[in-house]
Length: 288
Image (cartoon, rainbow, N blue to C red; front, side, top):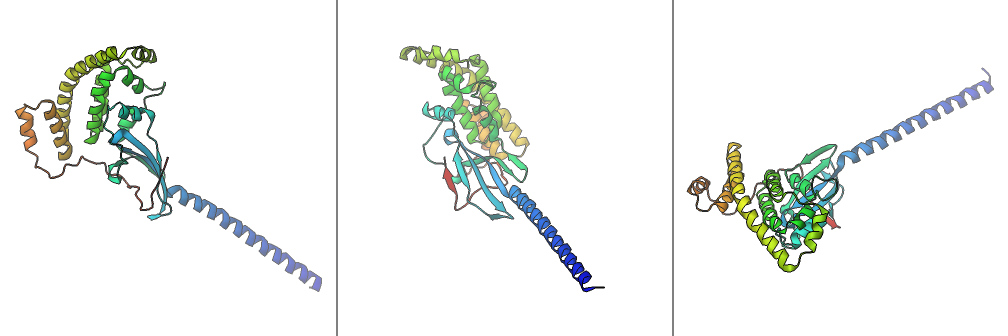
């Protein structure tokens, strides 16, 4: 073999080796990008939380890999105008204080393609019924029916305080049926045209009628829920439901007897949903 041929073979070998190295490097880079994408997609945690106080809502997000936090939790206030109206009208209780960590309920938690949803989503779905595409505009309905709203929303909040969100649809639809579901915008103008005395009269009439019809209904609703909770071996919810039923019929010896079967507790705590992650961090940040 000539010297020229040997040099040519050597050059070709180096080219092939360089090509292989470039190919391996490219494959490694692609694998790294894909791996990083998979890790980041599975480590992203996001969701929504709800506080019964003032019906406040907030979204949250953070990054975590193999149980190790990569970022602090970032919060964004999502409380809507409707919820603020309910608080302003004093139809629900709103202390004005920022809820503590244990007062926030995780409504939705999405991570790694898996999603968790709690019963509180039931109430949030109804609060979102303020758009034209909704089954009914509850914001408009509340303005049109101030007396009914003043009776209904405190009861919705009470059910939420006892983690009985499953009763929210029954409470709301019972009042909608009673009122004739007057959530039409045209009705709002009629209400706006009423003077102070006329509005007060309308509110008083609705409040009296709503109380007479809703309270007996709620008594039976809570009694049924209490029995169902007992059957499901959920004493906390059962006790709460019996307490509410007794509130509507304080002279009932039968309800009092059922309630007496539960042991007294020094501090009463409503049942809480078990969430896959509490999204807490000592470095949490809050934004709006």
